[in-house]
Image (tube, rainbow, N blue to C red):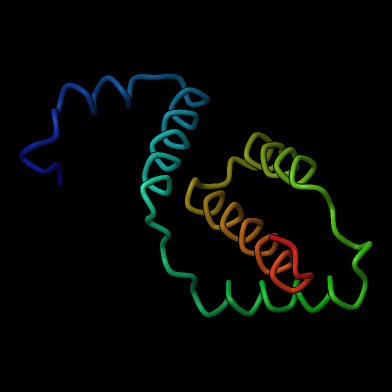
Length: 109
């Protein structure tokens, strides 16, 4: 499962961290990956959901919530429901795409 280049001790040390710290580490690693320009492709269901949200926003621009509020909501879902990290990443991507689409539609830069 590990590539030859990956240090098994590093993985074991990361796995030994308490859950909140492992989540924080995973998020930091994910941010470093996306910071280099990699964005995983959306599934058709995610694309449909983003289109639905964008259409809802266009019908009622006041229906949006600020990113900080949405981010807090995601955090509370992780803590309360213990959802998997891939779900959180998809939510983050969904929020990011919604914001980008909203800005593109409004003519903002």
